[in-house]
Length: 233
Length: 233
DNA sequence: ATCCCCCTTCGAACAGTGTTCGTCTCACGA
DNA sequence: TCGTGAGACGAACACTGTTCGAAGGGGGAT
Image (cartoon, rainbow over all chains, first blue to last red; front, side):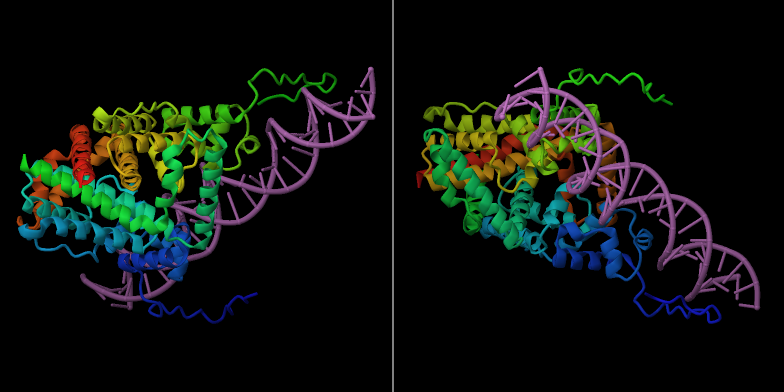
């Protein structure tokens, strides 16, 4: 129960006590909230609270929550460094870049979801990643057209995998829920004629969080092998 | 301004006038709203309004909005028929199945977004699709392990592509906005040293809604070619 | 035939969301 | 010293998913 300040003493407002608001500080605070409490906690009110202010104050530096999301993604993408293309090992470089992109996004659980909501990524670091990928693919001998299509598919897959990965690494609660779902699934499949899902029943063992990395490597291997076959013709 | 009914005449409540609520009818109404007004309009209140009732009434047949979303996705997936595996043309069958999945999802713009939010798809038609894909891949000579990983990658890509596609086919407003974004991007890239984005600047022409189908075919071609190379070894 | 119980229906409300409006206050240039 | 304009912010709006409790009616048991 706080007491209103005495009216005879105009409350000394110390403005410089807290660092002044800025776009960068808002993005930083949003990422902190994201990492600490998950994507659902990233609300304008929660971000404002982190900065010890009100939600309306944010709109002076950020026009939208969508724009803020885009800035968050761009900040995360800034950490990924794109390599200088080396034609001798371009395929390994492509794989590594995809791995790095995924790792950067998965490091902030839920950020991959944001990436999906952005139709046309025009943010500086998005462009840097796109250009870097294109350069690698062209170093592999692909035409510009082929490189464009391949880069599109790879970035699509990277976003997809990162999104899935951020779901797995959430925490124990979701782990338990996922396990529950898995058991439901097996029970349902067993309740049907055994011949209904012969492959899927056995496939269950390969489809766990442990095999996530293997699944990624398999997909990269297959796609790049196909890319080389196409590039030759 | 409606007048309350006369108290001496007990208002004859005709219950059978509107078809009784059911899970199926709710899902149907939700899909109608989705197709007519987009994913943002799919709210419990709007669905209830479509059925001429209140939002609370829905919760007798659907425990959650998430569960409703899962049911919607399952209903959409029901339209896709999985082929009988033919080892002679398994690769073309795989491509066709992916195309069908994408088409079914893209037909209801926004449904692909739902697919992403479902961690472990255990719904009957999801399982049917998964089993069908696995059967096709095994017919191609892949081991169960390889088939599992390949099927995972393909379904990931299908969801990703469908989500992107539903964004493009939205309407003129988003088309205009996307064009605006594209122009911003080009302007930004031109404002930098021309050598900064040499590939990306030229790639822009290949990256439009018109080339969407080509991008899909390219990705399928590359991945399946790589799959065959892996299967042999 | 009667009664009772339980499932369905639904109006009202709650907590929370993004966003806007108008006011207030401060730091800086003239 | 005095505007002045940009940033801060309290309050409110429209909207969301969801819950509660009171009705209502149909079907099974007596």
